[in-house]
Every structure is written in structure tokens, then in C-alpha cells.
Image 1 (cartoon, rainbow, N blue to C red):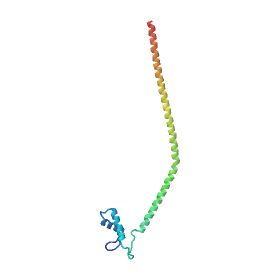
Image 2: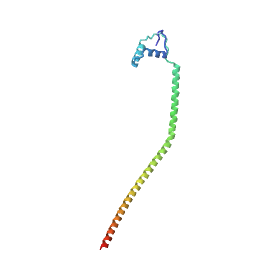
Image 3: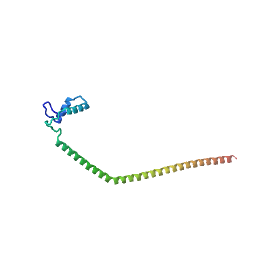
Image 4: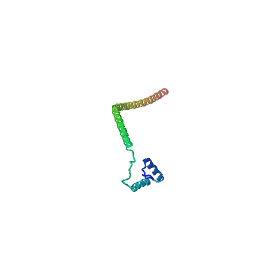
Length: 149
């Protein structure tokens, strides 16, 4: 974009001009206006063109992105190695957990068997006590009858 004197503006000045010129318009309207201005602006061969970005800054940004990517790749490889190192330990831990769960199930099963046996013994004991009481009552009845006669 050119200012009123006809000289090229830098990106910051372009942004400022657009903000001032199109303050309340929506983004779609602004985009349409910028595209229209680009079509209407004469493309004279005598006009000096200035790049609207800094090649050195762009290259530096690209280099920094590559370094970041390489750093992240190395970090991912280290994480993968760590995970690979941990796999046998996790497998052993899983085996231990499985063994402990089987032992827990067996102990629980044994507990319920013992509890069931205890209940059966208590029931049988109660039946035996009732039978003994009944037998005592019968003997007492017989003794009372025999004394009366």
C-alpha cells in the first residue's frame, strides 16, 4: 500500500492504515476491500516494489522451527527408549498383579467354603441340641408317668 505521498508503507504502517480506514467493518468486508484495492492498484513497471517481509527474519524463523522440530524429535526418541525400557518391568508388574488376583480369588473362595461349613456345623449343632432337649422332655415324661403308677 502507498501513503498519500506515493511512498511504500511497511507492514506495521499498512496494518495501522487498514485499522483506521476500516475500523468497524467486519472481517469479510475488510478482506473484500483489500482484494478490490489490489486489483485496482496499477501494476506499473516503473514502480519500485518492496518486499513486505524480511527474508532474513523469515529464514531465521524457519531455522528456529527446524531446531525445535529436531529437538522434539530427539525428545520423542528418548521417550520411546524409556518406554521400551519400562515394558519388561510393566510386564513383570502385570504378571505379579495377575498372580495376586488369582491368590485373592482362591483365598476368597476358601473363606466362603469355611464360612459355609461353619454355618452347616452351627445348624447341625442346633438340631442336635433340639433333639437332646426333646429326648430329655420325653425321659422326664416317662419318669413322671412311672412315678404316678
